[in-house]
Image (cartoon, rainbow, N blue to C red):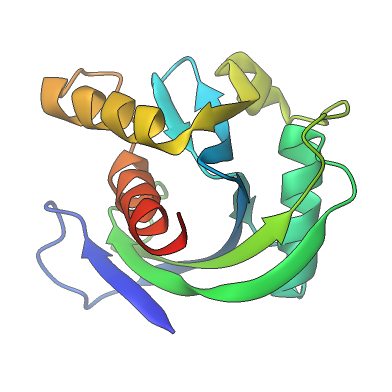
Length: 171
């Protein structure tokens, strides 16, 4: 089920050479607490997940990303939640724009987290997994968006939109 379509303000047309990036993300809740990634470089909270490998099943990719980024243990996929279509400027100059479809899954996992297997850029950006009250995470991200600091990441709009929807529909 399509949850939202987001088009970056710098995108004037959906025509041209498109870089496609499928992604999968996890929603792990325990009452009003949610398992998120805090990234020091961007000063924001985001759902665990990321890009899929070529030919990788969406749910398998989500489980891989959740384990790698958070160290989550005893993960259970409860259900597919939906997806967001997003159009952004391409990070690669040979493309006119990037199209990303992010799939979201509602999951359970143990509160205690194991060790992570972060990629070098994730370590460099200061990414850490945290259980946090969802309403506190929303307020934090909204403040970052409001301040429009130069370090603000490209995904904060999507992440904050999803956190608000999760808080409204699932809590």
